[in-house]
Length: 385
Ligand code: FAD
Image (cartoon, rainbow, N blue to C red; front, side):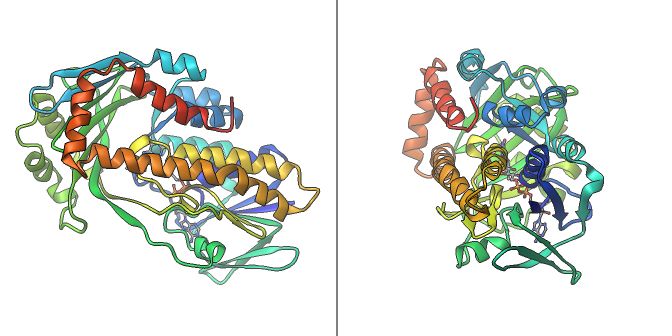
């Protein structure tokens, strides 16, 4: 069996690693010459970590991951702690710890694990064609690649999605802008072993430790789409949106490097239940685009990769049958993740400020139990124990 993987991002790379490990011949085609991930870092929750462990990356992942032992919410004006608790009960319940990692390093680890030289860069798919016993991808340089199965891991702007669904999907603006980047850890802003989030006014400022003494930071602000803001205005923009916020937030704004701070308008796509057509499977953001509010988009792509490689092991009824089993195992799971993230997004970002205000009040009496049990449920819904 030969698998054609379109896209060398988190989903495509994990799929290629998984298929190769199971002895399936793979060829990976990536549109760009050099992958530049959209964000600075990513939190890999234990369901994603288990997938990377399963795919043989246990040791390298531990070297990249930050140690996030505690979680805390802080009041935006005074910086007072609303709640702070250990993440140990979560780790004990699910059997693995979360790892926040710098994206460029994650991407490098994935490509090195697969074999960077085996990825064909600069190959942008324009369309795909299926016949009774094969599938072909056509690239914008006029070349093509044919295989038995095609994995469409071409991201949220997927061109293959429409072929699979038979209709075009719209990305839905989630109503907020996210700025993110990396800074050296400064414990006057937040403890080095804690996921710290300042909340107020439907906005948030968050810090997570990654390796090499760095914080992954992000700022979220509910805003209209299409404002004329970019890296050139980032420090002024953040100072304006976070005027009156606590001293650690002001310090963080003064420390960020505008040249490496990303500004992203956050979107998702209404979930759909069809993930496959014939010999083609959607995987990662092409099949389910979520807001990052529960940090599960990339983890879900890792889960997809593991499940896909597993179902393709049993293909005596044909590839189409194996892909239908992939769809059956994944469609409800990924729909649930997208909708959970959307719900959390709305509460966190003041879609209804009365609801958001109640959440702030609830945080003051939070012991960790409610938050961790919600996370636990999400994590345990993954394919690996
Ligand atoms: P991508 O990473 O987008 O990769 C798609 C690849 O396909 C790209 O390399 C692209 O160049 C290539 N491609 C596109 N079109 C073509 C084409 N026509 N032909 C060939 N190649 C093509 N997830 C988490 O798990 N935890 C988090 O903490 C988290 N935080 C996030 C924070 C932010 C601000 C954002 C925006 C997302 C976050 N996510 C997080 C989600 C995560 O980034 C995505 O779910 C993940 O990157 C999806 O991987 P993918 O491979 O499907 O898509």
